[in-house]
Length: 294
Image 1 (cartoon, rainbow, N blue to C red):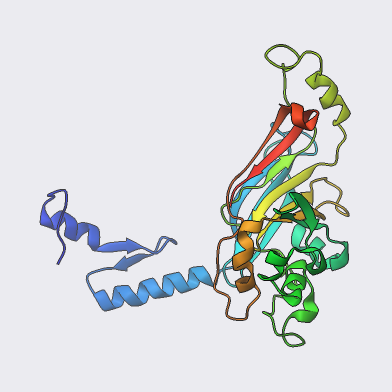
Image 2: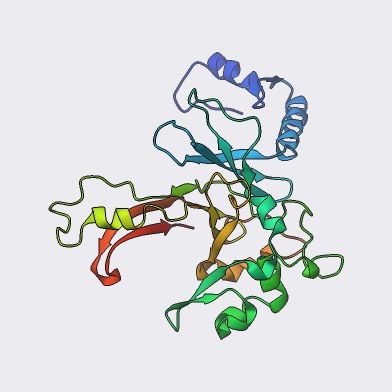
């Protein structure tokens, strides 16, 4: 029995219930409950079996110019995998037919021992390598050596040679990117910061000139439990290579589940990122700071 909280005429409610949309524009008849249930199940199954879906995007430029790239994050519900791609944008706003690079392909090609992965040791108040031998006692109680190697991308601990969850052979190392939008960090872009209330003895323009040619990096959070940084250049060889990954200690108690054969999707590092140039006397002056959320 349906009731109308807004006291609309009953026939209006019936009109609203008579048809539903499955997201692809197909009308589903709601007058037959069994038929509607089957149709909705079919629609949701088609959705969950679909290929990659775009989740977010960022540009390396505030205006369309030569060399502008569009960075897009993706997720694949079938395999709990993700993608970050860079696609050239023409001056008329059109996109190139194929991406310049894909981060998942670069990760597949990189030896796991070459990956720069770090976490935080609260007791020692310092960053440490994300390797089992470097973890503190509390962290070792949460993750085994095999699970740590799995998170680093070691395929030998996966089934059938190992006991942990088997990932896709191609593009299976990068977790799904759902709600975390990629952010591009290149040359400092701030303006009018050489006068009060900004410092006048340690000028922003000096900092901007010093960092003008720093390697551009695209940062994004993924549900493999990591904040990833990827080389953001338009060089198809090095662009998309992972520069580093950070595993917050807050997600470690749940990361073991990510490695298991019966893994059901969870959200780990799925929040928004913010980047800003700030003046911090404790850090010696101007710095570019990224703040991430889970």
